[in-house]
Image 1 (cartoon, rainbow, N blue to C red):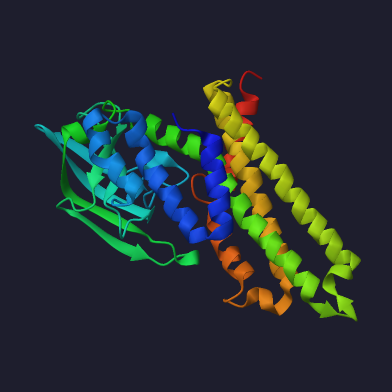
Image 2 (cartoon, rainbow, N blue to C red; image 1 turned 120 degrees about the vertical axis):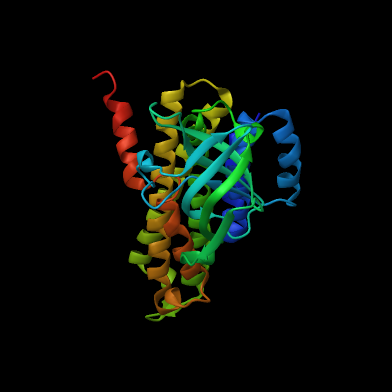
Length: 319
């Protein structure tokens, strides 16, 4: 079983050292988790050792041009054809799209006339009919688009039962949201550490910046923001490890952890840039790079506004 406190610790420490390395670790987990949880023995044996060793790069292909926060707009299709499915559609903003060796990919499956359902598939990156392009984003992460033009996927490469795709997708996102918060903590802590060093050596008005009371107040706010978010993230992870919360309570806690930690990290890094002054907006500055890297965390795996909606829905149940 996955130890979510360990995953959170890993993402926080990697985020402190290198946001790009943290992303590589996270995407391997996100792209392979559904295979681990819902895959057959053959699927696990084929892909998990290669993902673990780094021989194979994994991706999670859910988002589409009209299906981001609103997954009801999912338009990719998987039509059954004998012992295979034929996939058609367009995926966007997919991490590792340009370099992925295997994707957990989601598409609609349903016989004609039946209610539309979503299924999950394990799709090799070199599958005939699959093409990909790169997209430039903040932070320079390997993100891009996938186009599915009659990609044939054997039926045995479906994950779970037909129609289980949304459960697979949302279950994965719910589990990983607190770990996104942990990554944000790593980014924020690095920004605080860089700022403490900067204000201690930078001299203005006859002394170090750290002697200015306004600067000290800013540092205190940064530290409190991070510590409060850290407690929420690790409480959520501990609950998941203990299994002492029901699915709804765990999902609410995960949304809270991601929301609070990513927003706190953004505030901390923004203040770090401010306290660095002109140096804070130079590309070679660590805090400038963190400013770019942290922005996406408030969007991917459920934007902050969506997390608020999800939390409110949980609160209103039974009212």
